[in-house]
Image (tube, rainbow, N blue to C red; front, side, top):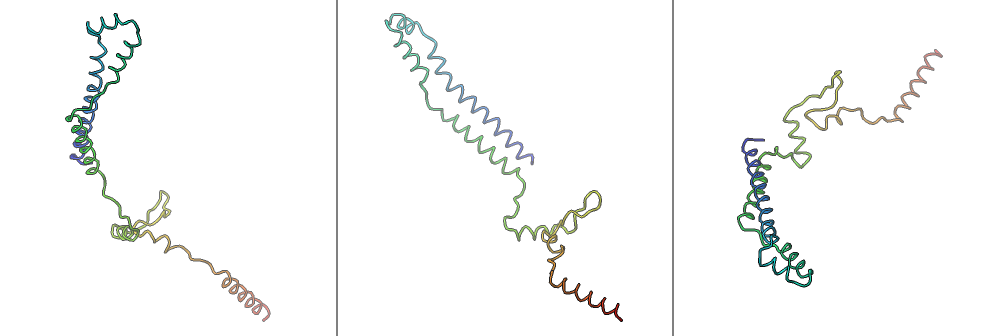
Length: 161
């Protein structure tokens, strides 16, 4: 990764953490202030004959939510954009999608065979088709059988003479 991409990723992560913290604080502050009973609400709870109305008022205050402020939303969007930009800038170049383009690129970059620790050849470096081109082809069994039969007849003729 380049310095620019690392910087963008770090800045984006810091902004995202701050936006998450701000969103959490924004969502919890109204709940905390509504759960602390003031003198008016405490006397209303004490004077009410049923405890269910006090509980419903308290649960209504706990579940009330408000929309996030615009600055938190914009900070979140900016941080995600910075993180995406940093990841894209720091990624390695893409490989070709088409096989023939990739094979041509490999041939241009280098040729030779990869050798293992004991000197055995592991495979081609440059040409991805070299392994297929250098292997033994199919064996024609009928031609080999005919060659063997001709050789046996020839050996018989040599022995007889």
